[in-house]
Image (cartoon, rainbow over all chains, first blue to last red; front, side):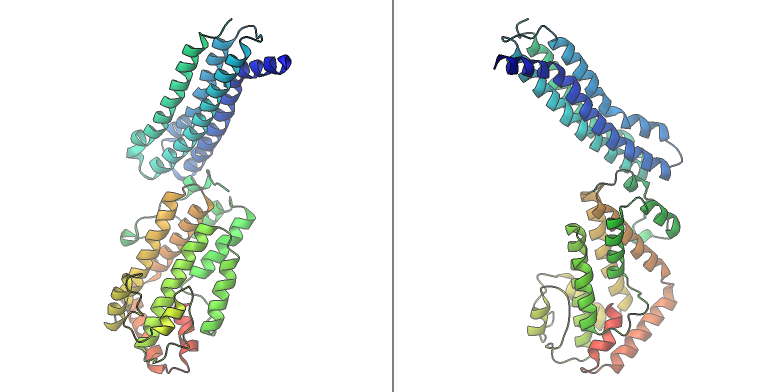
Amino acid sequence: MDNLIIALGWAGLYGPMALGAIGSIIGCALAGQAACGALLETETGHGRYVGIAAMPSSQTIYGIVVMFSLNREVNIDNAPGLFAIGILAGLALLFSAWRQGQCCAAAINVSKIKPEIFGMSVAPAAIVEGFAVFAFIFALVISAGIPA
Amino acid sequence: MSYYTLVPALPTLAPLARLQELPCSTLKLEQRLSMLSEADREQLARALHLCQRERVGDEALSDADEIALWHSELEAISDPTLCAVIAEYLQSRTLVAALRYRLAGQQDGGSFKGFGPCVWLIQRDWQQPLFGLERRFPWLMQAREALEAGRSRALEQMLLERFWTRLWRIEQEQVFSFAAVAAYRLRWALAEYRLRWSGEQAQEYFDRWVGSTLQSLDPGQSEREWAGSEA
Protein backbone atom coordinates (compact mmCIF):
# COMPACT_ATOMS: atom_id res chain seq x y z
CA MET A 1 0.00 0.00 0.00
CA ASP A 2 2.82 2.37 0.82
CA ASN A 3 4.39 1.74 -2.54
CA LEU A 4 1.13 2.64 -4.26
CA ILE A 5 0.87 5.88 -2.32
CA ILE A 6 4.47 6.73 -3.18
CA ALA A 7 3.78 5.96 -6.86
CA LEU A 8 0.75 8.26 -6.80
CA GLY A 9 2.96 10.95 -5.27
CA TRP A 10 5.36 10.66 -8.18
CA ALA A 11 2.42 10.76 -10.59
CA GLY A 12 1.29 13.98 -8.93
CA LEU A 13 4.77 15.40 -9.23
CA TYR A 14 5.07 14.74 -12.95
CA GLY A 15 1.31 15.12 -13.68
CA PRO A 16 1.13 18.88 -14.28
CA MET A 17 3.92 18.74 -16.81
CA ALA A 18 2.67 15.62 -18.62
CA LEU A 19 -1.02 16.55 -18.67
CA GLY A 20 -0.22 20.15 -19.63
CA ALA A 21 1.91 18.88 -22.49
CA ILE A 22 -0.85 16.52 -23.68
CA GLY A 23 -3.28 19.45 -23.68
CA SER A 24 -0.81 21.61 -25.58
CA ILE A 25 -0.26 18.88 -28.15
CA ILE A 26 -3.99 18.59 -28.78
CA GLY A 27 -4.63 22.34 -28.72
CA CYS A 28 -1.73 23.30 -30.95
CA ALA A 29 -2.60 20.51 -33.38
CA LEU A 30 -6.22 21.69 -33.71
CA ALA A 31 -5.29 25.33 -34.14
CA GLY A 32 -2.38 24.43 -36.39
CA GLN A 33 -4.61 22.45 -38.71
CA ALA A 34 -6.97 25.40 -38.97
CA ALA A 35 -4.03 27.72 -39.65
CA CYS A 36 -2.85 25.44 -42.47
CA GLY A 37 -6.33 25.53 -44.01
CA ALA A 38 -6.44 29.33 -43.76
CA LEU A 39 -3.06 29.61 -45.48
CA LEU A 40 -4.62 28.01 -48.56
CA GLU A 41 -7.35 30.59 -48.74
CA THR A 42 -5.58 33.85 -47.80
CA GLU A 43 -2.86 35.94 -49.38
CA THR A 44 -1.70 37.83 -46.28
CA GLY A 45 -1.68 37.52 -42.49
CA HIS A 46 -0.11 34.10 -42.48
CA GLY A 47 2.17 34.95 -39.56
CA ARG A 48 -0.67 35.71 -37.21
CA TYR A 49 -2.44 32.47 -38.07
CA VAL A 50 0.64 30.45 -37.19
CA GLY A 51 1.23 32.62 -34.11
CA ILE A 52 -2.26 32.11 -32.73
CA ALA A 53 -1.91 28.38 -33.33
CA ALA A 54 0.92 28.35 -30.77
CA MET A 55 -1.23 29.86 -27.98
CA PRO A 56 -2.05 26.53 -26.28
CA SER A 57 1.66 25.83 -25.72
CA SER A 58 1.71 28.03 -22.60
CA GLN A 59 0.01 25.30 -20.55
CA THR A 60 3.11 23.14 -20.86
CA ILE A 61 5.20 25.96 -19.39
CA TYR A 62 2.75 26.35 -16.50
CA GLY A 63 2.95 22.59 -15.96
CA ILE A 64 6.74 22.69 -15.79
CA VAL A 65 6.66 25.49 -13.22
CA VAL A 66 4.10 23.66 -11.07
CA MET A 67 6.19 20.50 -11.33
CA PHE A 68 9.26 22.36 -10.03
CA SER A 69 7.25 23.92 -7.21
CA LEU A 70 6.05 20.43 -6.16
CA ASN A 71 9.47 18.88 -6.56
CA ARG A 72 10.69 17.35 -3.28
CA GLU A 73 11.57 13.97 -1.90
CA VAL A 74 8.39 11.90 -2.15
CA ASN A 75 7.41 10.13 1.07
CA ILE A 76 4.31 8.65 2.62
CA ASP A 77 3.41 11.97 4.28
CA ASN A 78 3.52 14.26 1.28
CA ALA A 79 2.53 11.83 -1.54
CA PRO A 80 -1.28 12.32 -1.18
CA GLY A 81 -0.89 16.10 -1.32
CA LEU A 82 1.42 15.92 -4.30
CA PHE A 83 -1.00 13.62 -6.10
CA ALA A 84 -4.07 15.76 -5.44
CA ILE A 85 -2.53 19.08 -6.43
CA GLY A 86 -0.46 17.74 -9.30
CA ILE A 87 -3.18 15.73 -11.00
CA LEU A 88 -5.91 18.35 -10.56
CA ALA A 89 -3.67 21.17 -11.81
CA GLY A 90 -2.60 18.95 -14.71
CA LEU A 91 -6.19 18.17 -15.67
CA ALA A 92 -7.08 21.86 -15.57
CA LEU A 93 -4.13 22.62 -17.84
CA LEU A 94 -5.00 19.76 -20.21
CA PHE A 95 -8.59 20.82 -20.72
CA SER A 96 -7.74 24.50 -20.98
CA ALA A 97 -5.14 23.82 -23.69
CA TRP A 98 -7.51 21.55 -25.60
CA ARG A 99 -10.40 23.98 -25.51
CA GLN A 100 -8.13 26.92 -26.18
CA GLY A 101 -6.97 25.14 -29.34
CA GLN A 102 -10.59 24.93 -30.47
CA CYS A 103 -11.09 28.63 -29.71
CA CYS A 104 -7.96 29.46 -31.71
CA ALA A 105 -9.16 27.33 -34.64
CA ALA A 106 -12.50 29.15 -34.58
CA ALA A 107 -10.69 32.52 -34.43
CA ILE A 108 -8.57 31.59 -37.43
CA ASN A 109 -11.66 30.46 -39.33
CA VAL A 110 -13.64 33.65 -38.76
CA SER A 111 -10.75 36.09 -39.16
CA LYS A 112 -10.02 34.48 -42.53
CA ILE A 113 -13.52 35.57 -43.61
CA LYS A 114 -13.37 38.96 -41.86
CA PRO A 115 -9.77 39.98 -41.07
CA GLU A 116 -10.79 43.11 -39.15
CA ILE A 117 -12.25 41.03 -36.30
CA PHE A 118 -9.03 39.13 -35.69
CA GLY A 119 -8.30 40.85 -32.34
CA MET A 120 -11.82 40.33 -31.06
CA SER A 121 -11.91 36.72 -32.20
CA VAL A 122 -8.86 35.89 -30.07
CA ALA A 123 -10.63 37.10 -26.89
CA PRO A 124 -12.33 33.76 -26.11
CA ALA A 125 -8.96 31.99 -26.32
CA ALA A 126 -7.50 34.59 -23.96
CA ILE A 127 -10.33 34.02 -21.49
CA VAL A 128 -9.65 30.28 -21.51
CA GLU A 129 -5.97 31.09 -20.90
CA GLY A 130 -7.08 33.07 -17.84
CA PHE A 131 -8.52 29.93 -16.25
CA ALA A 132 -5.29 28.06 -16.91
CA VAL A 133 -3.46 30.88 -15.13
CA PHE A 134 -5.80 30.56 -12.12
CA ALA A 135 -5.11 26.82 -11.91
CA PHE A 136 -1.38 27.49 -12.23
CA ILE A 137 -1.15 30.28 -9.63
CA PHE A 138 -3.23 28.52 -7.00
CA ALA A 139 -1.35 25.26 -7.51
CA LEU A 140 1.81 27.22 -6.64
CA VAL A 141 0.15 28.77 -3.58
CA ILE A 142 -1.24 25.47 -2.27
CA SER A 143 1.97 23.56 -2.95
CA ALA A 144 3.71 25.64 -0.25
CA GLY A 145 1.65 23.76 2.34
CA ILE A 146 2.84 20.29 1.35
CA PRO A 147 5.40 18.89 3.79
CA ALA A 148 8.91 18.72 2.40
CA MET B 1 -14.82 13.20 -37.92
CA SER B 2 -13.56 16.77 -37.68
CA TYR B 3 -12.10 18.81 -40.51
CA TYR B 4 -9.94 21.48 -38.90
CA THR B 5 -7.87 22.04 -42.03
CA LEU B 6 -10.61 21.78 -44.61
CA VAL B 7 -13.14 24.22 -43.17
CA PRO B 8 -10.80 27.26 -43.09
CA ALA B 9 -9.62 26.29 -46.58
CA LEU B 10 -13.12 26.70 -48.04
CA PRO B 11 -13.57 30.02 -49.86
CA THR B 12 -16.17 32.37 -48.44
CA LEU B 13 -19.52 32.41 -50.21
CA ALA B 14 -21.30 35.77 -50.39
CA PRO B 15 -24.88 35.92 -49.08
CA LEU B 16 -27.36 34.59 -51.62
CA ALA B 17 -28.97 37.98 -52.18
CA ARG B 18 -25.62 39.58 -53.07
CA LEU B 19 -24.14 36.65 -54.92
CA GLN B 20 -22.56 37.73 -58.19
CA GLU B 21 -20.06 34.97 -58.83
CA LEU B 22 -18.50 31.95 -57.21
CA PRO B 23 -15.25 32.65 -55.34
CA CYS B 24 -13.37 29.96 -57.27
CA SER B 25 -14.01 27.20 -59.76
CA THR B 26 -15.92 24.10 -58.70
CA LEU B 27 -12.91 22.05 -59.79
CA LYS B 28 -10.71 23.89 -57.31
CA LEU B 29 -13.32 23.39 -54.60
CA GLU B 30 -13.48 19.68 -55.35
CA GLN B 31 -9.69 19.49 -55.03
CA ARG B 32 -9.97 20.87 -51.51
CA LEU B 33 -12.86 18.56 -50.71
CA SER B 34 -10.54 15.66 -51.48
CA MET B 35 -9.48 16.07 -47.82
CA LEU B 36 -12.77 14.37 -46.92
CA SER B 37 -12.67 10.71 -46.00
CA GLU B 38 -14.01 8.22 -48.55
CA ALA B 39 -17.16 7.54 -46.49
CA ASP B 40 -17.89 11.25 -46.08
CA ARG B 41 -17.34 11.86 -49.80
CA GLU B 42 -19.97 9.23 -50.55
CA GLN B 43 -22.41 10.81 -48.10
CA LEU B 44 -21.82 14.21 -49.64
CA ALA B 45 -22.42 12.87 -53.15
CA ARG B 46 -25.75 11.43 -52.02
CA ALA B 47 -26.71 14.69 -50.35
CA LEU B 48 -25.90 16.63 -53.50
CA HIS B 49 -27.89 14.22 -55.61
CA LEU B 50 -30.90 14.56 -53.33
CA CYS B 51 -30.78 18.36 -53.35
CA GLN B 52 -29.99 18.80 -57.02
CA ARG B 53 -32.65 20.86 -58.75
CA GLU B 54 -31.70 20.12 -62.35
CA ARG B 55 -31.23 16.39 -62.73
CA VAL B 56 -30.74 14.89 -66.15
CA GLY B 57 -32.12 11.43 -66.88
CA ASP B 58 -34.63 11.22 -64.03
CA GLU B 59 -37.46 13.05 -65.78
CA ALA B 60 -39.40 9.88 -66.49
CA LEU B 61 -39.50 8.77 -62.86
CA SER B 62 -42.95 8.67 -61.32
CA ASP B 63 -43.60 10.42 -58.02
CA ALA B 64 -43.63 7.06 -56.22
CA ASP B 65 -40.25 6.11 -57.74
CA GLU B 66 -38.81 9.50 -56.89
CA ILE B 67 -39.96 9.25 -53.28
CA ALA B 68 -38.57 5.72 -53.01
CA LEU B 69 -35.26 7.05 -54.35
CA TRP B 70 -35.27 9.86 -51.78
CA HIS B 71 -35.87 7.36 -48.98
CA SER B 72 -33.14 4.98 -50.09
CA GLU B 73 -30.60 7.75 -50.60
CA LEU B 74 -31.43 9.40 -47.29
CA GLU B 75 -31.09 6.12 -45.41
CA ALA B 76 -27.54 5.82 -46.72
CA ILE B 77 -26.58 9.16 -45.16
CA SER B 78 -25.37 8.45 -41.65
CA ASP B 79 -24.72 11.99 -40.41
CA PRO B 80 -27.85 12.88 -38.39
CA THR B 81 -27.60 16.64 -38.90
CA LEU B 82 -27.21 16.33 -42.64
CA CYS B 83 -29.98 13.78 -42.77
CA ALA B 84 -32.33 16.07 -40.83
CA VAL B 85 -31.70 19.14 -42.96
CA ILE B 86 -32.17 17.23 -46.21
CA ALA B 87 -35.35 15.61 -44.90
CA GLU B 88 -36.64 19.07 -44.03
CA TYR B 89 -35.79 20.29 -47.51
CA LEU B 90 -37.47 17.33 -49.21
CA GLN B 91 -40.52 17.89 -47.06
CA SER B 92 -40.72 21.51 -48.19
CA ARG B 93 -40.58 20.31 -51.79
CA THR B 94 -43.38 17.88 -51.05
CA LEU B 95 -45.54 20.69 -49.71
CA VAL B 96 -44.90 22.87 -52.74
CA ALA B 97 -45.62 19.93 -55.03
CA ALA B 98 -48.94 19.39 -53.26
CA LEU B 99 -49.85 23.05 -53.74
CA ARG B 100 -48.97 22.82 -57.42
CA TYR B 101 -50.99 19.66 -57.93
CA ARG B 102 -54.02 21.24 -56.37
CA LEU B 103 -53.58 24.41 -58.37
CA ALA B 104 -53.40 22.23 -61.46
CA GLY B 105 -56.85 20.92 -60.64
CA GLN B 106 -56.29 17.69 -58.83
CA GLN B 107 -59.44 17.16 -56.77
CA ASP B 108 -58.45 14.21 -54.65
CA GLY B 109 -55.39 14.04 -52.44
CA GLY B 110 -55.56 10.30 -52.00
CA SER B 111 -53.14 9.58 -54.81
CA PHE B 112 -50.65 12.24 -53.78
CA LYS B 113 -47.16 10.93 -53.11
CA GLY B 114 -44.68 12.84 -51.04
CA PHE B 115 -41.95 12.75 -48.45
CA GLY B 116 -42.15 13.22 -44.72
CA PRO B 117 -44.54 12.75 -41.84
CA CYS B 118 -47.11 15.23 -43.20
CA VAL B 119 -48.08 13.32 -46.32
CA TRP B 120 -51.07 11.63 -44.71
CA LEU B 121 -52.23 15.02 -43.41
CA ILE B 122 -51.94 16.49 -46.90
CA GLN B 123 -53.95 13.58 -48.30
CA ARG B 124 -56.58 13.88 -45.57
CA ASP B 125 -56.92 17.67 -45.64
CA TRP B 126 -56.48 18.14 -49.38
CA GLN B 127 -59.42 20.53 -49.59
CA GLN B 128 -58.14 22.87 -46.90
CA PRO B 129 -56.32 25.93 -48.28
CA LEU B 130 -52.96 25.00 -46.74
CA PHE B 131 -53.73 21.39 -45.82
CA GLY B 132 -54.20 22.52 -42.22
CA LEU B 133 -50.44 22.93 -41.95
CA GLU B 134 -50.17 26.72 -41.86
CA ARG B 135 -49.15 26.79 -38.19
CA ARG B 136 -46.41 24.27 -38.67
CA PHE B 137 -45.20 25.79 -41.93
CA PRO B 138 -45.97 29.52 -41.89
CA TRP B 139 -44.23 30.02 -45.23
CA LEU B 140 -46.90 27.93 -46.97
CA MET B 141 -49.17 30.97 -47.20
CA GLN B 142 -46.51 32.91 -49.10
CA ALA B 143 -45.85 29.92 -51.31
CA ARG B 144 -49.50 29.55 -52.20
CA GLU B 145 -49.87 33.26 -52.95
CA ALA B 146 -46.80 33.17 -55.17
CA LEU B 147 -48.09 30.14 -57.06
CA GLU B 148 -51.54 31.60 -57.52
CA ALA B 149 -50.07 34.85 -58.80
CA GLY B 150 -47.82 32.98 -61.21
CA ARG B 151 -44.69 34.22 -59.47
CA SER B 152 -42.81 30.96 -59.77
CA ARG B 153 -39.46 32.66 -59.62
CA ALA B 154 -40.28 34.42 -56.37
CA LEU B 155 -41.34 31.10 -54.88
CA GLU B 156 -38.16 29.42 -56.06
CA GLN B 157 -36.13 32.27 -54.61
CA MET B 158 -37.94 31.96 -51.28
CA LEU B 159 -37.32 28.22 -51.08
CA LEU B 160 -33.67 28.68 -51.98
CA GLU B 161 -33.22 31.36 -49.32
CA ARG B 162 -34.85 29.22 -46.65
CA PHE B 163 -32.63 26.27 -47.42
CA TRP B 164 -29.56 28.49 -47.73
CA THR B 165 -30.17 30.02 -44.28
CA ARG B 166 -30.70 26.61 -42.71
CA LEU B 167 -27.44 25.33 -44.16
CA TRP B 168 -25.55 28.44 -43.07
CA ARG B 169 -26.78 27.93 -39.51
CA ILE B 170 -25.47 24.38 -39.51
CA GLU B 171 -22.07 25.68 -40.59
CA GLN B 172 -22.07 28.11 -37.66
CA GLU B 173 -23.32 25.59 -35.10
CA GLN B 174 -21.02 22.68 -35.92
CA VAL B 175 -18.02 24.54 -37.25
CA PHE B 176 -15.41 21.90 -38.04
CA SER B 177 -17.69 18.91 -38.50
CA PHE B 178 -18.55 16.96 -41.62
CA ALA B 179 -22.05 18.44 -41.41
CA ALA B 180 -20.52 21.92 -41.79
CA VAL B 181 -18.52 20.86 -44.83
CA ALA B 182 -21.56 19.20 -46.40
CA ALA B 183 -23.72 22.25 -45.63
CA TYR B 184 -21.13 24.46 -47.31
CA ARG B 185 -21.01 22.23 -50.40
CA LEU B 186 -24.80 22.26 -50.61
CA ARG B 187 -24.76 26.05 -50.37
CA TRP B 188 -22.22 26.06 -53.16
CA ALA B 189 -24.58 23.93 -55.28
CA LEU B 190 -27.42 26.35 -54.55
CA ALA B 191 -25.19 29.26 -55.54
CA GLU B 192 -24.28 27.53 -58.79
CA TYR B 193 -27.94 26.88 -59.50
CA ARG B 194 -28.86 30.46 -58.64
CA LEU B 195 -26.14 31.89 -60.87
CA ARG B 196 -27.32 29.75 -63.78
CA TRP B 197 -30.57 31.68 -63.82
CA SER B 198 -30.15 34.16 -66.58
CA GLY B 199 -32.70 36.73 -65.55
CA GLU B 200 -35.59 37.15 -67.88
CA GLN B 201 -34.74 34.17 -70.00
CA ALA B 202 -34.88 31.82 -67.06
CA GLN B 203 -38.13 33.36 -65.86
CA GLU B 204 -39.68 32.98 -69.27
CA TYR B 205 -38.53 29.38 -69.59
CA PHE B 206 -39.70 28.42 -66.14
CA ASP B 207 -43.10 30.08 -66.53
CA ARG B 208 -43.60 28.48 -69.94
CA TRP B 209 -42.61 25.08 -68.63
CA VAL B 210 -44.82 25.29 -65.55
CA GLY B 211 -47.72 26.62 -67.65
CA SER B 212 -47.48 23.85 -70.21
CA THR B 213 -47.23 21.23 -67.50
CA LEU B 214 -50.22 22.57 -65.64
CA GLN B 215 -52.30 22.64 -68.82
CA SER B 216 -51.46 19.10 -69.74
CA LEU B 217 -52.25 17.78 -66.30
CA ASP B 218 -55.13 15.61 -65.45
CA PRO B 219 -55.37 13.69 -62.18
CA GLY B 220 -54.36 10.41 -63.85
CA GLN B 221 -51.25 11.85 -65.41
CA SER B 222 -50.31 14.09 -62.57
CA GLU B 223 -47.91 11.78 -60.79
CA ARG B 224 -45.70 11.26 -63.82
CA GLU B 225 -45.86 14.85 -65.04
CA TRP B 226 -44.87 16.46 -61.80
CA ALA B 227 -42.08 14.12 -60.88
CA GLY B 228 -39.71 16.17 -62.99
CA SER B 229 -40.83 19.52 -61.63
CA GLU B 230 -40.19 18.71 -58.02
CA ALA B 231 -37.23 16.41 -58.60
